[in-house]
Amino acid sequence: MNNDALERIKQRQRPSVPARDESLMSENIDMSLSSHLDTKISVIPDNVRSISLENKSPEAVNYIKTKQTTMRLEAKISERLAIICRKNDIGREVFLEALFEHYELNSEVWGKILEEAKSKAGQRQHLANFKRAQSMMQKFE
Amino acid sequence: MKTCACISLSGGQGKSTVAFFTALLLAKKSQRVLVIDSDPQANLTFYLNHEVQSLEPTLLEVLTGQVTVEDGIYPTPYNNLFLIPADRGLFKVSEYLSSSGTGAFILKLRLKAVVDIFDYVLIDVQPSRSQICLTGVGASDYVLIPVEANVKGLNSLVDTLSFLKEQEALAAFTGKILGVIPFRDRWVGRTQTLESKQNIEAMKEIANSINILPSILESEQFKRALRQGHLLSDIGYPNLEYPFEQIIEKLAHDQ
Image 1 (tube, chains in turn orange, brown):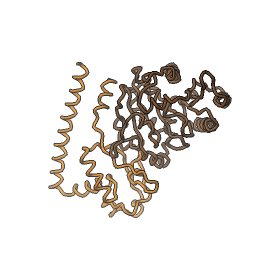
Image 2 (cartoon, rainbow over the protein chains, first blue to last red; image 1 turned 30 degrees about the vertical axis):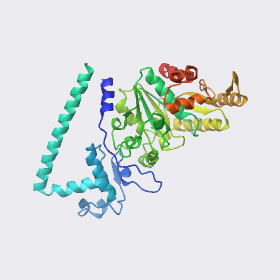
Image 3 (cartoon, chains in turn yellow, orange; image 1 turned 180 degrees about the vertical axis):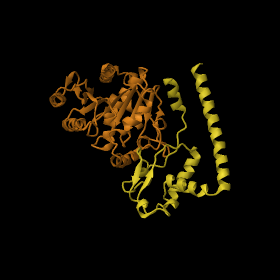
Image 4 (cartoon, each protein chain N blue to C red; image 1 turned 60 degrees about the vertical axis):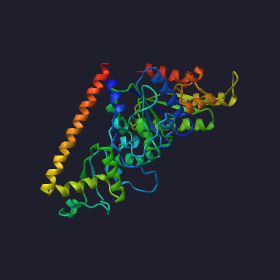
């Protein structure tokens, strides 16, 4: 199992991450949101807007509970996403949240999005099965 | 899996040198080794000939949870040797570690995912009383303290031991000090210089009951081996490898 695990690490497709900021002064909003634990954000930066805030009570506006997960995106899409987010000075999390909330209300487009997502899921599963089979074949060579 | 950090709170004490040669030797002995470069200076990443790409994960993204630990592990040109690299951007993780309160534990937590994959994890720790240093130390079953055989080294040893004691009292460091390794021990022919001799004697006094391991001699061959990415035995100097053999011996047999 251990040798296979090392082979999987060698062949792994790594996700793209946002370019690292090496400057001393700038603040990284993505970093403050990407915590291992569920976080409560007590102050919302001025440049972050969310449709879901419009109908909340004043007390609720000061409290947004977030949940951290790991996302693995296709490398090129991740890069394109990173470019758009950098250009607009927003994190990918709030961009995806806005996209989701906007299209969830549009049933025609929503159906097409789900269809596309299922097709991508099928492709990834096929690729994962192929890699697993390759790895098994190497083990028994 | 045994995890060992190389720690000294001053720079230039030999941490990256110890981590590099120990890792290569372990890997040559067919041990599965993971090296973690936990220093924004990223010397170890450089020695292991890894080029960090701007959009590829490093230790920063592993610690902040942006990627899984497996996504941050890369093969190296050496069999059995893998690396979680760093670059200058790693210093930004301090903000995350201190605000989340997870500094001492987060690397230990992340490494749980690979406990069955590697035999040894070696961590090259940032030379500073920082959250990055704390997370390296907090993850370690053992620490090695390389110390230059001069006054700067002695001050570093005092500071490092004090730091480890503080962290032990807070249960942030639960490991064991494997030993102190004198670094750049200078000999002229078969005679140790007075400076080196006196400084190593002082190390023994400061370290008290902690082992003083065989010293790393001052030699141009270390620089040559680092520059070429080879073991000392590979470039014809097996005797200079003795300190790392002893480190491995201690790591292997300590329970």
